[in-house]
Image (cartoon, rainbow, N blue to C red; front, side, top):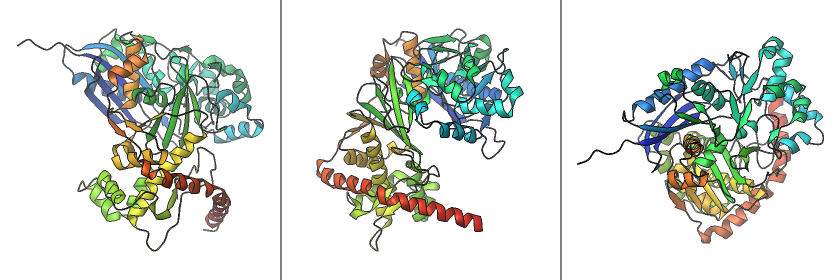
Length: 521
């Protein structure tokens, strides 16, 4: 019997906000050969601060990669490495290539007042019309403006600013560069696919445009693994490293949603809804994010930050504490609990409607209202816990439909990912509410896989992303809408939207009341 040939692999790395993951996949079959992950080390110096020690982050990432490499045969052939990471934040280097203090990550809120001041002066919405992003304090330019104001000595040392995955690439290759998707969170002119001097000026940091490093194509090779990086990761010296992309883009690529009409919904803590297009999309105005994608495309992402799995966790933990305890100790699963509740209820849920705005950020898509809060409308003596669970599933599905209908593009295919996509009952309800097929590819780590795919394109193992998708993204479950539910969910969606108008003054009154109570307590 002849010995099998050594595997040819692509390595994908996802440097996330809360965890760092690495995978190795067979470059010819897409089979997952090894994976590893660990928590991201973070530094909290205040309630509004979120930082990372750059060296510790690199060391943790290197160990995670090494764990994957060590799980592979010694004769493995490494084609390329691709890295993705959370977008935004501030990873700054000085002239010598040394980090200028800790990295500041995107959840950091220290620059909120700086951002609010600029936004308040942007009366005609020009900043959004240029960049296509609803700006957050953790973007590089509000943070740079804050540093210039509060830590001028630190600011004066900065020579380069890039993103999380760019820093990992720098430690792998010694090359200082970024690529298009992460340029999107800079002051970016979305249509021109370049930096925007106007936005730099608006934040009072025109000189910071010089901090942007070389911008490469996401499908290019940024460099090769250095001897130092090889010693820490186990990757062979000279292994090609792709330029990679930001995590929102990598997730979309990693589940095969790159073409016209294809969309991705991530059923995570938030509901992230995104689509790829051949031209930039700016509607709904002032909402969500826009990213440059590989191969000259654009991504539109609108996210209901309070409407994902956190709603399901909340309703189970709050109203089914005994069940939650059984789930926690492994006596039953959340998926079984959800499936049982759905089986004991019916589409339309006897008129109970849930608006999924539990996060303190309120409603973030497809409209913005920080005062919005979650609500059940239609509670009665006959309402059961099963109704409340189904209410959350249907309410989040209605929110997804609301987001996609606000986008000025025809969505023909939606791919689901994230922890919630493991629930067949939830996926089926989403399919029924939207009356569209839902696809759940057999992909364990879509972000890391998307980065690995770009690495394979960069070394020309694949002709393009479509070729990489056909090779590496494995088919999974498909959920088709039940036409018998169409009329019910059409009526339910109409009621869901009609309630938003009357709820708006209720949210405002509740917000005022809650703050008055806090002041008197």
